[in-house]
Length: 224
Image (cartoon, rainbow, N blue to C red):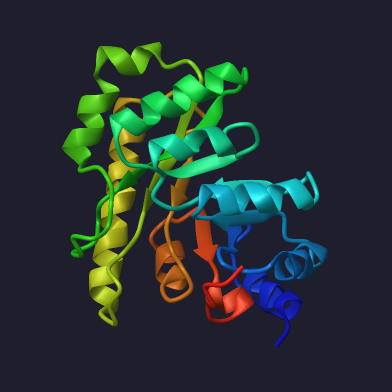
């Protein structure tokens, strides 16, 4: 099947409130343009310089979502145009996003990444760490970031019940943060969870954004 038909097939199974983010990392611009021409406007990348290079040559109505582990020294490359950073996993990182966004007069939407998987290699806050940051005096001074929700990655496993449990953990984090810290903030509404192998479960458990790569573009080939 073509990239266009893959996108149309996935879209046909998504509820109206769930956004499809096409994970285009390591894929050539020609593949992204095929998705674009099929109506796709939300793309997810995990390397700052690769995303910037693609942004420079592609149509400007694209929403670029940064979904990978972000190093503080790379933030400056994406701040001028990034639509949302999904992978905020520390107060230090958020402080730097705020600092760089201030230079461009922007307020950058961000998601707090939670560590919900059993794998130690995954990044993210614990719930207690996130609360500590939200309650800190520093957080109140950051005027150029906006927390729009949460993100998480489930364990890479065939155990669907474990995946479901992990997604429920993330939804619970979202619900508690919404009630305690963002009750009046309408923009705090995003739960970014679910990838090619587990997005149907993620949607059942409350996802509002699914990050899908190989089901759209085929297997990765790690070459630009």
